Image (cartoon, rainbow, N blue to C red):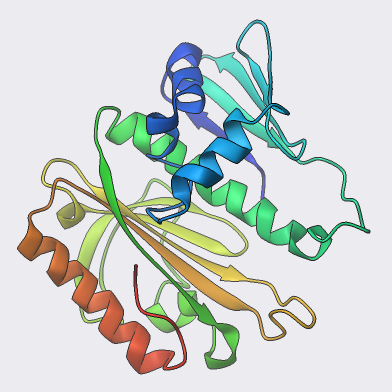
Length: 241
């Protein structure tokens, strides 16, 4: 397992490019629903510092990280190359978080294109401190099968879930979940976060749940499982949003 910032998406390069260059499309894979999501997307992908490659195969986003699109036999390889770290920058301490964030987001990009290219996701997000232990371990996800393999288990939340393992890396697990979408599947990503001296000394974890076309009752059921587990296991953490 590696933290390789590269995925092969079963879509053509033009479809991928559209997902990178239309704000409403970016919102289907970048981050999660939040009050500041639109402003963050605008700053990262549409600020004056952004450079579009003339042939639509490269995109330099704000901050200098570079998306590269390369046609391959099975679709399009999307890679993110990190900019060099400025150790004097206020962002230097967050560099690994940014790398891990890109890993999460390009997997969400792949999922959006391959599973819900015209869908609109609804998300739940929460983060927890590391002093109570790894969320991956506490949820019972340390030994899920290889990517692409089917799984079926009862999460520590008490919820029975099944689908396929979407990806695994050194610090993250992504699972498709059948009942997180009215048609097809939803996605859950659990990521353990490294310690940051004086900021997050004990590390932490975050969870992003992406659902599609669920009714209000179903959404509340999913939210309730996760929020109850969060409150019981990480009592100092903030509620889902």
